[in-house]
Length: 351
Image (cartoon, rainbow, N blue to C red; front, side, top):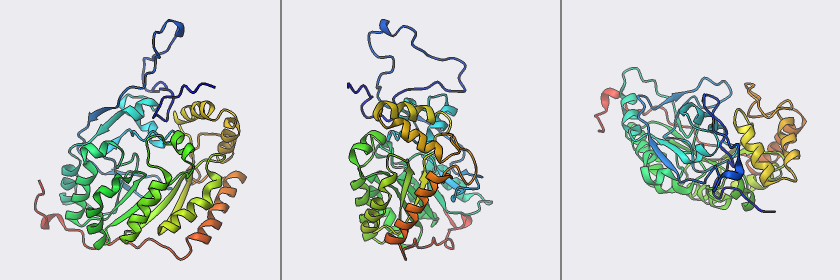
C-alpha cells in the first residue's frame, strides 16, 4: 500500500478554520497538475504582544501563569491540544499549525516590564503552557534563552515543559537557577517505540534522546519530572510501566500523565491521521479514546477532560499508580524558592 503521508508532518490535512467565512475545496481533483496541499516550508511570523504572561482560570490545571514564546509548533504532534488556538489567528489547526509559526521577539523585554510593574504579584511561571518553548524555531530566535535570563536576573521561579534536547543548550542558565531553587523541568515522554514516535510526533527528539535529557539534568541535581502525556489507549497505553521504569532509571524525580482528548478540530485531524497511518487498528483506538470520555472524542468537563473516566480510563489510572509505586516511590521534586524575588524598586532596567 502506497504511503502518501506528508513527510515530516503530523497532520495530513488542513481543515477549514471555523471562524473563516471563505473556504478552499477541491472540486475536480483530476484537473490538478500537483497536489492541492503541498508540504510547504515553514513560515515565521512576528508578534508583539503588550503582555507576555497568560493567566489561566481553568480549575483542573495545576499552573495558573504561563508564557508561550511561540504559537504553532514544528514538532507536528498530531494530538496537540494547542492546534485549536491556531484558528484564532486565521490559520488552520492542521498543517498550518506546523508551518505557520508566530514568535515574540520582544518577549524578554515585555516580561521585565511586567515584573517591574508596581502591582506585579509573584507566582511561579510555566514556559510552554501551550506550545513547546524549545521547538526548532528556538534554535534560531533564542527567545526562551532570553526569558531565562530575565527569570535569573529577577530571581523568579520558572518551570519548563519540553520534549526537545535543545534545552541542554541552556544548561548554564538552568544550573544557576537551580542553585537558588528557581527551576523545575518537565520532559514529555510519549513512547519508546521509534516507529510510532516518527508518525505521532514527527519532528521531535527520540524517546531515548529524552531519557538522555533526564539523565543529564539528574546528574546536575536539577529537578526533573517525566510527563507520560498523552496516553493514547491502544497506541502507547501498554508502555506505561516501561516508560516509568526508564525515566526512573534515568533519574527522574517525579511523574505524571494525561489521557488524550481530541477537542475541536483535533478530532478530525487525529481521525484522518490514524485511518491513514494505522488503518487496521484505527477503529479500535478511536473507540477506546471515546470510552474514556463518555463515548465522545471531545471532552470539556472540568476535572475529567484530561484524566478521563469509565473502565478504560480506570485501567490506565491503575496501571500508572502501580508502576509509579514500583519505580518512583519516595521520589519528589524539591520545592521552589519563592522568597527571593527581586522587588521592582530594587531592580535596574535590563534593557
